[in-house]
Image (cartoon, rainbow, N blue to C red; front, side, top):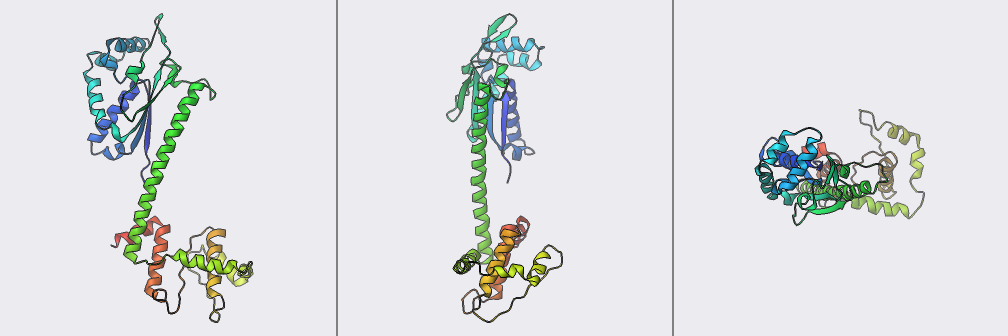
Length: 307
């Protein structure tokens, strides 16, 4: 499954993120990556910087304190670039989770204090957008003194909540994907009764007599076979006994021992004389293929590609 992306951007970086996202959606080379972007978090991003001359002027003044920037001059030329980004982004924003932080403390610039990006510019005002004030100036909104900083905790908690939502979304997608894969396997292989049902019924029989079957783990022949399970050459363990003496119950115990104690995958099938489906070799082979495909994506792809 494709891992989702989250962008966290400060100030003008938020505009760059929006523009990059728009360009990626329009380019076939990067569209697959763009569709994996699920969340954007903005820290004092001037979404409407060009709509208000005094805000744009404030941004220019703080930028010039660190040296003039060409893109600031471009935005100063009456907003066309920024307006275009906003207009285009509005049409695709519904597919994203959006959260905007805005500053509430003025920034000292060239002997005066000004609010670089106020609430009206820092918020997109989309219905599904969430936003929150931060008690910091334009620089401090993304810089924190320590983990105990109140602003850090606020941003951290929002990030954690957003990550949790992404994980929940991924889990739901994976569950749906897995449900579809299992359904396709069952249909193609003709699986009517799930193998787990047999295992559970035999488990119930064994639990009625605590300690039963455990003797086999002390048997030298069994231990030799078990310890050689990882070798490339297949090893077989043949157990024989009279009818109705507990061979299936013992096999159930062995399957559980290998899976739970040795942490290895196990596929199984219990033949039942006279049963409509459980007495056929073809049903056994299809059941084993089904179980192996559930545990291995490579085998699953091979099986499903046979359709």
